[in-house]
Amino acid sequence: MNPYGLLLRLYPRDFREEYGEDMVQLLRNQLRDENARRVWARTVLDVALTAPSIRLEAHMSRGTSAPVVYGTATVASIVLAVVAGTTVGVSVVGLAGVLVFGALAFVAWRRARTLGSSPHADAHWWKYLAIGGVALAAVVVSANLADDEMSEGMWAVFFGGLLFSVGLIAAGLILGVTHAVHARRGRAPATGSS
Image (cartoon, rainbow, N blue to C red; front, side, top):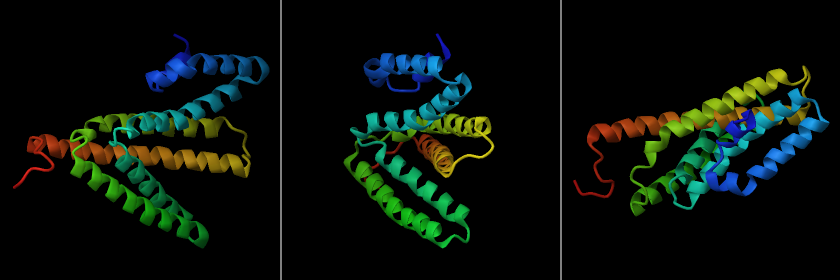
């Protein structure tokens, strides 16, 4: 299997079956017409940023990932507010994101727990951790492969990818701890009486 075929395995099977051939053809065309190093850097970054969200979309219909998505956005907003430092506008946006996404994460978590749609949603903690780690590595490698002076737009993409990957890692760690606690308690039902 070629390297791009391995990258495509990060996407859900249904997505690969529908779009995989077109994606491979697009990569071939780009490699024929452009610098291979830049094409591969852009491709790895694209896969790292889009595969996790497409995988999450596949789970959204089941209602198990909404709390994780909003929790990840909350963590990313916290990081944004902290990194912004003295830049008031960016700090305000980060803090607003913490409030909005934090509230949505809590409501989604309560709703999923109340409905009992997936009492074992935390069993997939390692996927978030692994995808976040791969995304972080792809962002760092892509930034190192890029020109010394990136445009503001590229810095925004780089920073967004960095926040997204750190958020996924944080979500994986939180779900991993939750999974360990549930395993230790013997998976008591969420709606059971005491």
